[in-house]
Image (cartoon, rainbow, N blue to C red; front, side):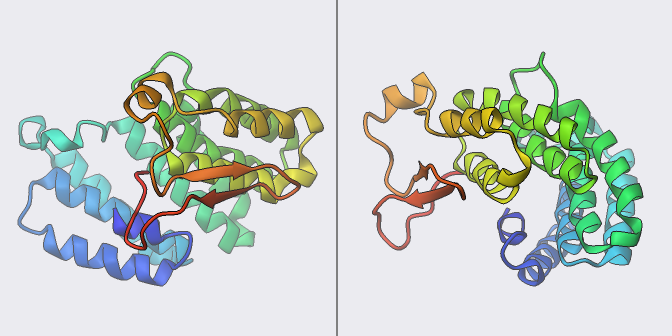
Length: 239
């Protein structure tokens, strides 16, 4: 998880952490080793290493084919085939930004992998995943210069936000809104602003009458941002 969190800011460190996790998981169940390799593949993609990404992704897929359901830890309940495909789609979007000559092919593959989970309207179990991977899907459409589809995707993401308790997802959408605001119509920008300004879902608000220390507060503007509330230096908000 630390490797995944480092991907946007420091891909090289993400690769180092994911490599260490892969080494540490060698004696674990096949599904656990495959999960670690999936993280390593994403880290290599963020670092722009196409060959290393393909190698890690191929080994990950091979291990997943060999994994037995009875040997898969309960903590990996969420790692379904659709979830795994979406994770590889995220990585392909990262690679497309690094390899312009291959961008069209990579983005086509990415959208095919991301759409089933990101655009689902029937499965409430993976709302957070749908929002997270939906941000990558919207970015893929923007990179492919498919503005109408990108706008439709972002409009859909705005509708999901009020039901998702995730600082990371809200932050990612705010970053996307900020970087793509010139390509978005006023109605879409306002929809995202309104969604990101909503409070946490009801169960979370009842458990926490005031915002938890270390959470992020959305600030409207041409370049949307999230600011962290005062907390101790060691506080790391849940994602």
